[in-house]
Length: 476
Image (cartoon, rainbow, N blue to C red):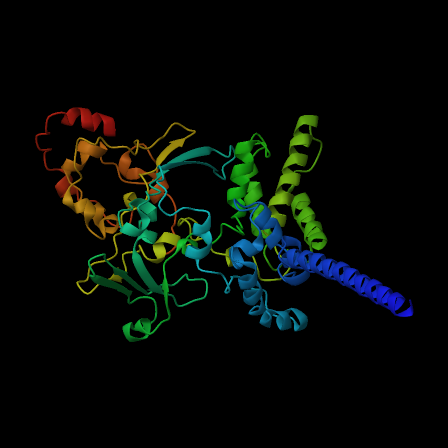
């Protein structure tokens, strides 16, 4: 009986130990999974680990990727074991978090976009043209409205077969480049390999580096994030945000010179003036807005409009100011476009030449239709659409056509574009304010830069082909 009882106690002890072990293992497994999930959450990334840039979470929440987790882009959608191994390579960032380091303005540990972006964005998907409508307001007393309509040739699929056209043509190619800076704003060296093995290289001799040094630069393959670099953390130009607020009605345009007043407040809110934590920045911004506000008695409706303006300006400036001094929205270039930063003009600037001396094509219509502009005061540009009945002349396909077209104009241009009228005030195709009425980063499209070719324009118009009058009318 004693031996039997001993076995029973032994079995009971073994069962108890096994049960306790299983419970402990279950608790550890649940705890481990919970800890792992938390370490991959936005809360951990932005608060526990990367609190060095506190503005990023708010920018991310307002982006088109606001529901995409940080790790999905920064580490990728990989297997758990792969992610664990990859996360260990980021341990070197821990020391910087402990002792402090300069606020980063770009990500340097991103996974290749072809591994990340294309996990959601199917590269072979066919895209239709995209129509963008932008509203801009002048700094005159009426804050005059100008409406811009732009049709973007986004590009179609067949991505890895070289058949893609439009903007997405770029990622369909075997294209590499060399950049001089971490934010990839200066790209002196570009190379494209065709499907048949032909290699073509372009070099910009004005970027401050020799051809020999440019050849030695680390080469990167062009990918989605080289243009769409701000999709995760966009920091908008506050002046553009004011235009958007006016268009949506958050800022009342009936207030006198309201756009001009907003621009004055933005100019006063420099990175040196508006810095610190959110509370400190909010107090500084409130004072700048109050100092610019009209004095004296106001009607109730005007007072309400002023309060709404102050609230919206506070929101805009808080999202475009930073805790660290010297950091502003300008510290984060957005390469999708070319309005506030060089963007497309990093390569399409007429300065990158190949061995034959031919530039990368500087032709706006490769990526978008010519912009249509409608001004509130009645002046408007010619519609950007041209009848498909006429084939563009060979000059339109020349690499530097956008630089040179002014000097090559003659009377035949009127067949598609209507009367020739130089300037930037609208009313005719060649005085389009969307092209000539502003300064572009890294680009000079000044309509007054050179005198028009008056002799060529004086030549009588040649006989138009059948339907030519209809085409000319449609262009006008």
